[in-house]
Image 1: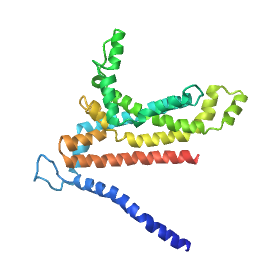
Image 2: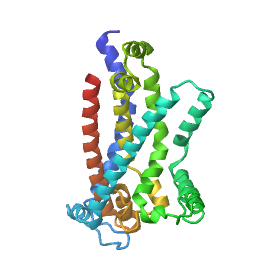
Image 3: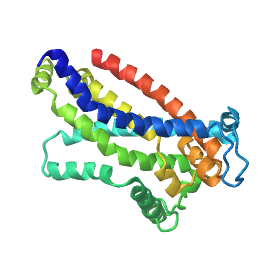
Image 4: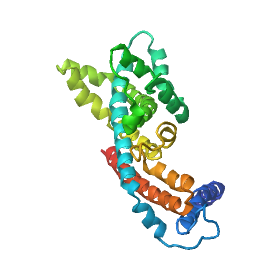
Length: 290
């Protein structure tokens, strides 16, 4: 069989999967785009019709929109900062030989396998509760007034919960990259008189640059769609203090029953997420080239 025939046969074999994948993505996106240009409110049946860009104008001028954008950025950047730095420190710790190393690695990675809803419920009721939570009991033991985290610092509380979930992922990726570092480089640097900090900044950190970039890329894509933790703990409040773009779309669609405006918000969220993804892909591409 010729090379051209082999390529044609290969394309024919993968075409059903490609068509299924395209249909899986394009059909929902096309329906969302169509609904975003319709007057479609479940509380007003029979009053639908084409509205053009009115739903987009309504969504973008919503007073909660800019709060949602700001909260989304704070959430993503806050979680990335905690997980990247914390994951790096944990990876360095777990890379050292000590008794019980394998057990500790399993315990560190375990939170990543907890469902977001379960994780949020555990944090809400067992740790952050101002009456029966662990932090409240610790504050009382020191003679301090318990702090209501979810009411007084709702967004910071959500950042803490989400960061706890994603910290094992960052630790696992960075630990794997750290273990691939050639020990001879570290030994050579140590023989040349380089101290621990010099070895870290001039040998380890450049080696971990690609892994850190991958961690930031993958986490950012998933963090932009954070929803369950907000719904379970704060419901986007108080007010719009912890409302993100994803949660705002939920409010418009399912709480206010305005499917048209919610669909417009979904399209806006997709566009913004793609802009972020393109920027990150270019960043990781330059990193890999270097």
